[in-house]
Every structure is written in structure tokens, then in C-alpha cells.
Image: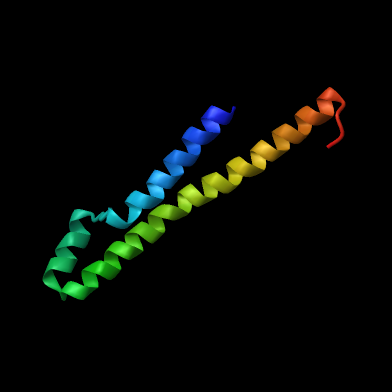
Length: 82
């Protein structure tokens, strides 16, 4: 259990360290940015990364809720106080 928690923590830390370096653009977004000013591209990249993060945040919150519910049910099943 502790080893998997350590691996998960290292993965999350690596994800946060690598995220400022990541630049993601679809081909249509790139065409819009190349035809406009240079400062607009940075804002577009930030917007894409912002929108990309929400599904992961939602999955994380749901995972925590499910984990707490399952562990609480397991304690009740064993007869231990919650």
C-alpha cells in the first residue's frame, strides 16, 4: 500500500513539474495564432491547458470520494468503529 502511494505521489509531482513546459495546440488553433499577434498564442496555450485539467480534477475528486466510501464500508464490515 505504501509503495503504491509513493509511486502515485511521485507521478503527480512529475506531472506538476512537467506541466509548465507543455505546450499543446491543435492545428486550427495554431493557424489562428500564426495569423495574429505573438502574445495571443501564450494565452491560447494557457486556455487549452486550463480546459485540459478539469477532467483530471473531476476524476481525482470522484476517486477520493469513492475511496473514502469503500474504506468506510470495509470498516463497518469488519466491525471496527468508523
